[in-house]
Image (cartoon, rainbow over all chains, first blue to last red):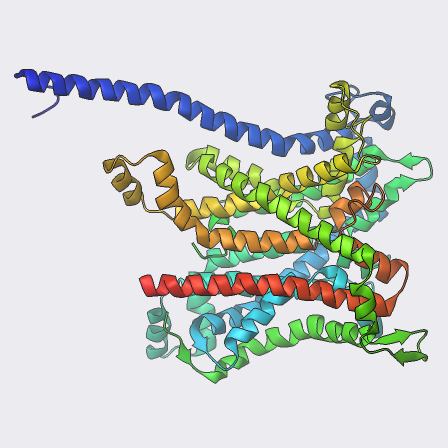
Length: 298
Length: 292
């Protein structure tokens, strides 16, 4: 019976009335629920953004305004703090140094992690499980534990205060992380593809570069995002292994503590600028990021 | 997936192994070396055996730091895991709103850790911070430099702000992998919202939740920069966590032997907890493979 035809028997009348009633009730119930959902989501986003907004607000105020009293938005809008950072080389070199070692670390990590992840996802070999666990333990190693030995090691081999030192030190946790994520993505690619390629006469390196890497490109993108993230946010090792030549932005920021108190405006502006690269990077991987956060294992 | 047994796979691992060994094994050996010696200068050192370990294990300050550390890690896990699941459930699923929500929620994760400390320092100051000022205006004598309870609450709030997103994003990706057919079947059965969550969504989330709890536990156990910038470990020692005690001892006081012994104990605690999690993950994957 179609819904539009008129009900004939009392039984049908009752049924169609009940159905219409149900529809109405569901509509009435789900609309407030939708709004409650949105309201809660909005509340969380406000909670996330409020401290960041406050930082932004401070960065556009002059120091006299900051200390003069609480203002919810900049009264005399100024970009003096940004101008100071972008024109003084001691400041902007901090950003360049940070980005340099992050990029170096991403390159090193991904190059050595790709074949290793392939081996873990495709082959069984002596000690594979133990090796994998050992790798994970490096992910857990607190940087504070390695602080002193790193300092001495890199000093001895003459790498202290170079970008390479920080890039290599960050490999401690970034390589295991890359292997872990990539292994998840690679295990999602059916093994038949490898076998077919080898039957077709592809050599291993050619297969790996020409066929396999393009197939997991989104996984590689996500991995690079994570490598960026963890190298960018880590500061304890980065500031211990450098002094003036390769100083990361985090150590430069301690300059704002002067004899006359903290230069709040500049601190806020510098902090705001450290958030920007992250936003740029997350924009590129936004469609894959959810899967990447589950390390390719959903 | 059936894996082929082939020991030549070691060649693929080798470059990675050398690099990680350089940055992990050599420094760790140095730590072990220091932990059993008393170092005066480059040429004078004595073998002490397990003395430093005994001393560290009986040090009341460190015992207190360990307890604080566990209290902190368990508290933030208890808040962040349920909250993260909740956020994942209400996040928009498609359209521009989904992208926008994803980017906004991810933001705190991409801020350098000392900047997170600075953000909250600015945000919570009584004179210039929005939160500190508001609380004072409301009549509460909020002061993180004098009141340990305020300091603790602020650090926990900061950590929730910083890391709940990680759990939320993990769960969001877990939820997205549930086929629509499951929800349709639930609707036909007239399952309640709770039943859908309990029997469809939660089982799918266990996998990602284990990863999330593992990552959160590790990172919270290593927390250093944020409380260091925000409270400097104070008032008193009330927010001094393990990493900070260790750094003060190793860099500040240059006590090589004791701090090395402390490092090893610290590392072993993390290793033990991680091993439990790892075994859990591996067993879960085994069960999944059997089911498939």
